[in-house]
Image (cartoon, rainbow, N blue to C red; front, side):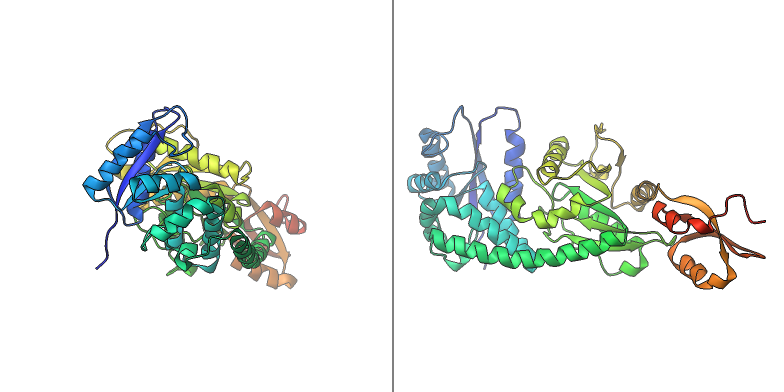
Length: 421
């Protein structure tokens, strides 16, 4: 029988910007994503952080009573704690204490499936542990499985700085080898000049649902759908699919790791190799969950994270998703946008038509006159270009078709200026 841990959530409001309820609701969702029951939530407005407990000692005593009365197993802070603060809080409350960062790292450790994702998460965990050796020694001794016990904690690592640095170096070398392979694959895609789309957005906004919709458009990708589930960070794997259209146009689309408020910096650093897919895209699709009343804040978080990983100015389409789940009008502030439910085929078609026009807008309709002696070229274009019409003259085959700017330069000698004589 699986024992469900019970948690008291704590949030210290330093900014007093009215967003504390949003952050605490998100912490609650993150906690439940770790299969932990939330039994109580405590918040406190503070003017400055106390070095001993982060919050005031009186509030710590209050939390201790909640833990005792509600038989809680763990206290989770929305704020990032130092090693000494964790130690002091645990000594006073007599209960396991973790912060939001460790909670997110734990979720990532649970969801990581590929070798690359596992390495990325473990490096981030070691980076988190390194400055907190003293405080975490007590915390790891206190834990009995569950939260924070995946990755290095599971191995009961000796909390030794040299050991952690050595392990980090080894893991980084393993990750670098995988990154090299990924870069070769990306370089090959760039060399082919295939258009690249990256899907970005908050976790659980519907990014994987959109990728699957694109997959179902392309016959070659049947049975290549990605996992979707209504939970935070359902998958950490960056999935890339090649989409071949009936018009013989093609592109690749990549579904990236979802973002969340205050995503740990060392986690972003570890996943940068994966997120580089975004920086090299020709077009971004930013999926927004309109069923979350704080969706504007989530848009800001995604935009800030994109800046942090160095994404250049790339055209963006905003998809205001899950419109079927709300009973109020929304007023998008980002353009261009489409308001849809990605579970509706009409909505998906609307998105796809917009994207197709946008990424292939540099294509031009032209006529080529190809001599009969070059029949192989006619066959090649029939298989790899969007042929609108095919006719014949005394001089050769006339193809009316759409070509990209690169193709136009390649076939410039075959272009018919005023029609065949």
